[in-house]
Length: 221
Image (tube, rainbow, N blue to C red):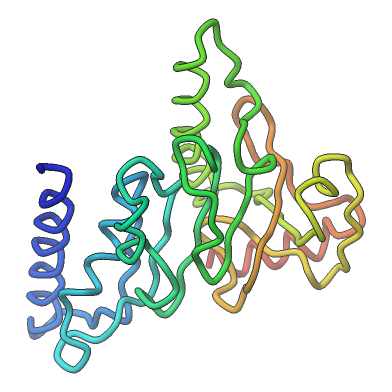
């Protein structure tokens, strides 16, 4: 029962804060806000939109879902999942997809890190520790994306299998940054590889390095 009402209660509290900010003389519209949620928190970010007045408050500018959980929002609860209707731009990072995280895609842009389900450096002596690591590793990935000088450069691929065996041939223009500095025009499914230990980002492919780093520098302001 608690798992039923607690996320809604939390979403209402966040919506009240946003309403206060939109009405304050020095406040901001919801359209200028970026909500980030991990696991159940990703779905709470989506629920917030249900309690905002589109006229008085506006619509959330961006929601980033960090491996949205599969545990709570499943079955008949699927209508309350984070999706593209909840903000002007919804980007989702998948690291434990299909196990502790949702498989998706659910956003405007979905990023499947190292294939989306299993993360390098997470192998452990117990299956629980391994799965928990896969699910939680999305957080340090996103944190690093805020400050990295190399960037997590993702690209589309016809299938997950093609990505896993290295049969992707994306065009230069198809590469996009994953994380904080993602292009809000990005649409579809993207894949990206990481290192097993920090720094996790591998940077752009060699032939794009100069141009890509200029883009990253510009986006970081």
